[in-house]
Length: 459
View 1: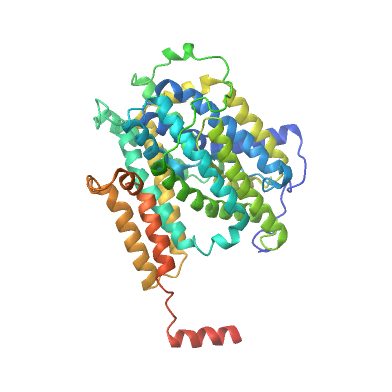
View 2: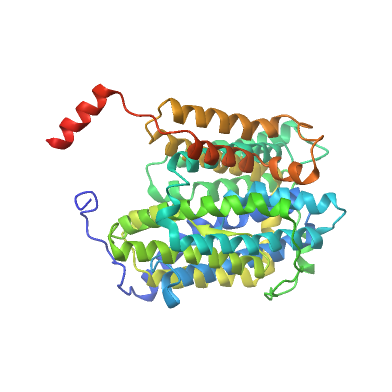
């Protein structure tokens, strides 16, 4: 470990860089995380038809991310990891949040009723992660790397349809699949791929932001962008707790609850990676304290997000890459990151401009992002020794999880509660993976393999 991270950090964890250095480092973190923070809101707003509410929701997403990032760094009352753990809207919840929205929509609800149900189940679900944060080391026995990898892969795979639909023009678009839409989305996709292969670290880091800007410029020349409605937006966004009310539905809650369990484990991995790049211990009491505090803050920040009208938060892993590239690990930087995000969130015009991103442009970018989520899950699975038992768990979990999304009408004869819960590929696949992991006995290594292992251990 010490040789892998032998280079000294430019600014260690407890150092205080000057204003210019802090501001520049913070801006790089914001660039790395900005698109990730606002994209889930843009997708949810577009798919569920939230229209005029989207700029406000984006403002709240930015503000809560800023506050959450500061909490993680300042660590009040042990709440937080005490490092640069940039908080942002989690992609993992996207499918489950959309499912909850469709439940409210199916009951005849408008945008306010949809948001009321989503924020209600997300707020109560946050207590699951808050509770699990104190037993995170024991949770790993249930939510294994195999289960985590399967669920993350299913999340990415199930969201790819959303990205591809946007690339073609968006759900029920009149020009769906038109050559101009496919060309525009394709240009964004190719731009991001080309930029990501650059030898310049900062170009790679900003590839999605630059790709979106390229797409917006081209879309502007094609007449696909209009800023006419921006004048009607208020000058400043005021955070209003429970602006859309509070409601609850068990069938909407259960898929959300499962994702909070998975997020607790995922955040543990991100915080561990952060400890490594920040040159902090990854074992012992200090490490356990940081992980518990970090996951606890993740849950608390998701609770805060629901109260202030935005979607669940998580620790962003891409910002660990920024720390490693810059050599700046000072937690002092997180105050600047949080300040910039809060400042951006204060002005609804930011959300209004972002709402004008044409669907094909957004789709070209999200296709890469969702594919990356699936690839991350595959990477976790690949790190496991895949014996017959694990391959069987994977086969059943993927078959059931992806099968429910590929077979419309499969659950139509079952009670509404069952339909709502198990129509989610994440719930169906995730529960299948967890139950099989607990029920199927571990395979014993062949005798010859045990002898070799024993010899190695003895040596």
